[in-house]
Image (cartoon, rainbow, N blue to C red; front, top):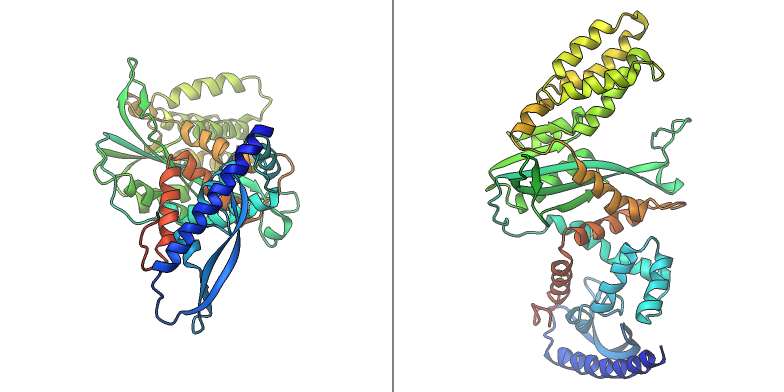
Length: 414
């Protein structure tokens, strides 16, 4: 630890010299924009991986826009005085560790970096909106030669602060809400099947998007991510999603003419609800009929299940409940031909997005005792989506260039 401290002291002195030299050069080269007035040098406390120091840089002010501008801050991509390397590391710890307090401890123990949990939170919230907008970035679609591209989505409830839930309806006994639904979507591709004919997801082909908006907003984001991934050149598009009517409509609007498959495991959950409506949970033949109907589902037998359920429903008192449970299957007959889908070598289960909900959302935002603001959770999840999509390097390069582009004389970051 003492050796690290000594090395960091020398490294910090070197960084101070290099950044001040760069700042002087940037200020000398800067060409003021129309309306900007020079207001003289101003000091800035800079934080780096090695420590902190003060540098001096020029300040310009536009009285009409009532905006100030520091060319050096933009050219060096400083985030509230933090260097890009430190900001990137702090954000990584802030979204990967179970809490900001754990991130503070981890940075101190592993990197000798002294930064408070509150500062970590502020940096994450500062960078988060850029990650939220990352899926909507402009650019050419990637080439895609995959025979099959999948789009999948699901939702996960995130516990919110009471002030975030005022007026919202929920599943609490009093009708109030405790959580907000965070949508998570993913795009992945398939080229091959194994020796048994089971589909194989392409390695590192999964990318994620997230949204706290409406299902319509989520559908647009998922479509845009598909387009960015090259859905226009993929052989076939398959929407693998829950069988809710709103999600079916989402597919029809955003993935026209694609093949829609109701996630098999969601179908099994509704199969249990149907059996409970018929006989209740404690019926002695519950497990036997559940097993039989599960096998029927895998043999394109959803219509047989509907017919049998109506034949077995001999109690007028349960008619309404049974028909309500059957409605899920009646609406989705075409999307539940699992035998046909399996023969064609398609995925029928949403294991990818279910795992994503646990790893991208759950492991960070659903820890015991956590209460989030919508903005706070949104920013953390967005950054985790960028990270899980293997876009971390590209995101930070793009962010540095966006900072530098604010200086006309410096269109790209150093």
